[in-house]
Image (tube, rainbow, N blue to C red; front, top):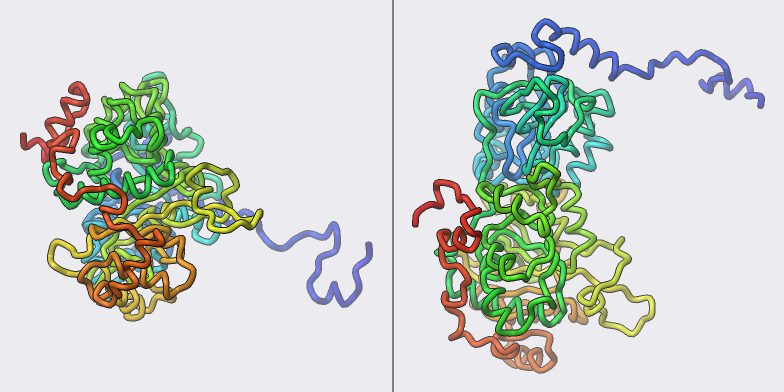
Length: 565
């Protein structure tokens, strides 16, 4: 093949010509940084007392840095060490954190070490993030779903440095992450295979690789391990004390079981972490048993090991649970139930947030969760005025994935046409009390997220779950079967009918409501055989943390703050 003179002039290189471009700049830069800390380490083992000095060599201003904050597991020692960096040496970092959970995470911005943030969930730091955003201390790239954030690590947010946490390492860098593997493999791999630097804090370092219970991440993916000053922090994020489950929660749980799970034959599912879903878990062995539903619904779960699921497991409702992460105190219980949980040869559970998120997207019939605000079309968000909470995995769980190709009874049951090419739908259920504890309506005319997004200069309003993905809205008033709506106006009317005395609910027409009940577009409790008077705490299989311990045969070891019995 011959190139034209014009092509050559335009910069097209002829075959065999020597390329001027270097193709290993990332690799060369990594080698430079590793060489700069060679005197501070023994092979892959960084000296703890020199960690700040090492980080100032390994991290360069403007770097993209992943700092593992998961839902629960925190690389807290590395976070504390980062706050000690000299902002004159290291600044304008672009931090990428699945969960912004610790004060130190935001101290990085306050001290001028970091500038930009991409994250999925904030939780306890939501107020401070909101304030920093207003004050111009940080800028938000985007609020992601979990797997959206992981995916971007492999596309346009490839990190220069990744810092994670594990239980144990050997002196070759092999990591044991135990039941709290969570996000770690997804975060590490993005750096390990594109010449980023991987640093892992661990609770202990063993001399003999055979002393590791198992290898969750190979040493060839890890550049450095450093022993932390204390075990990494784990937040018991998924523990709900049954004593705080109210009759209203139980009423809504009864409606969910009868009006959604039984009606659609839901067999595989994911639960959110509120008291509403905890109530569902706790009445399966009682109310569900009364209805003769064991073996017919709620068999396969994608779920952190909720302690409130113990009675359902022990009474034979649950066939399998794959976990996003662990839950503090549940380690011995999950290890003792290998038929139910995914466990390694060492006996401990193996979690994997990326794969569990994918399972929650494509492999389950139903997601049911709550929110802070919902509008009259079913759009919802946990971003409200003064709070930038983030979304976690809810948008992954709470949408209908168009790529699904396998059928199940529940998925097929949402087909509303005779079209032979019609496809089913994943059930996306929003379970919302019409008013929050403070007396603020949960169902509003316009989401606060719209104003927050505009004020913060976000190109998109931070909506958690879009209304067009929501198939059911369940409140204490009733259930709106939104997937049946034949128009936008009918959808609005259906939601208004179950919105109570909120601004949205007050515009419903009693005449329309009666018609929609007849047409089974909405259902009040009595329409599905749920008696409000039966919704009391006697239905709970366990009424306290202490009773959950009893159900577990003493295997569940609740954190200290839940040991009030």
